[in-house]
Image (cartoon, rainbow, N blue to C red; front, side, top):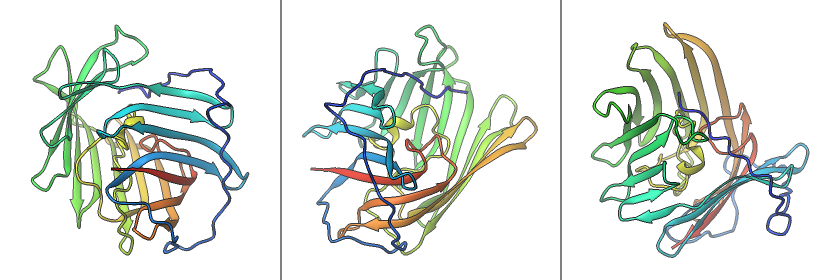
Length: 285
């Protein structure tokens, strides 16, 4: 499958970034803050912190201009004080180019409708592929179909999302050449927490997780995620391993934006952060 992007820049940027220091919060899931984030805001930065060691691990941040376009995405390693990844998307009509070989296409509703990418982003001669995104009448992303560019009518991989009560509850990723499961996932939520424009949870997103939180992939989950379980399979639908992450100690603003959450258990490749305390910043229109 698609390899996780591993472009590493060895630039030291002490003048631009500093190691984030965060401290453990003992608040319950209903913890709150007097802070008001604002109107029509969306996530622009996630800082992840080792609360036990009381030091920052890293961050992923998007610069978003006044037209609501993402102009730069930076992944920063706070431990080594280096930039891991930096992307400067450019826009032509309905297309957001990550670079000349990789780009997103958006539909009339400004949702991502297509991705063109490389199986190995570090190799410009790698096989090219395309992903077609399908949304239901309510605006939720319900499926993704993968095609090799040399065979644009024959999908080789499909992801299906199942929703209930406004939340993504189950996901399956199927190898269409064999009919076997590649991975699946189950997600549970806190019924009492209704955050504004919180994280997308797409457990299958391995290669482009740095972009998921900053582009439009349809309606977001109604409630705050509580537990995420992802299973990977060997041929014959045999479970190879599973990753389980729990989310607790939500700190909310007065206007119901998530300010921070504690992510425990396993890291998830689909979430551009390491386990620990996840702190969120927002850009408002």
